[in-house]
Length: 149
Image 1 (cartoon, helix red, strand yellow):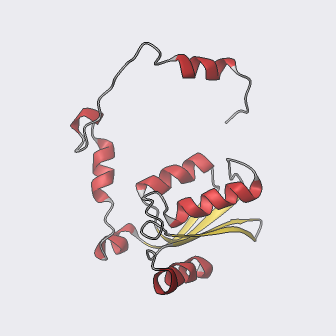
Image 2 (cartoon, one colour):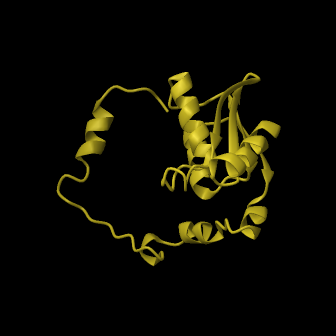
């Protein structure tokens, strides 16, 4: 955990990034370290957890991180939480809470509230459109041999 927090502090003091750091570990070995780079690379998805997951997947040549654990300087936001579940990490350890993050301007509560609403009631309108080829990609996927998830 100290490494994740140190990465967050270094990111603020040296890199001009946000106060978040994350480390992916497997069998006691560090696989990757991520730092929040949202403002430094102009990418709203470049949260520390996402960066650590992306790098770990590249380093392990896998899209799943089963058997890996994530240490993060702050409780993951909804986007990072989704990535954690998609990556199938085994466990997450965090330091600061989402309430701590909200106190310094990183408040994710509105996103949690939006997720709970039906798509047509969200503050960003989400409307279903069904062209004639809507299901062709899904049909092609189920006909193709692939790895189980």
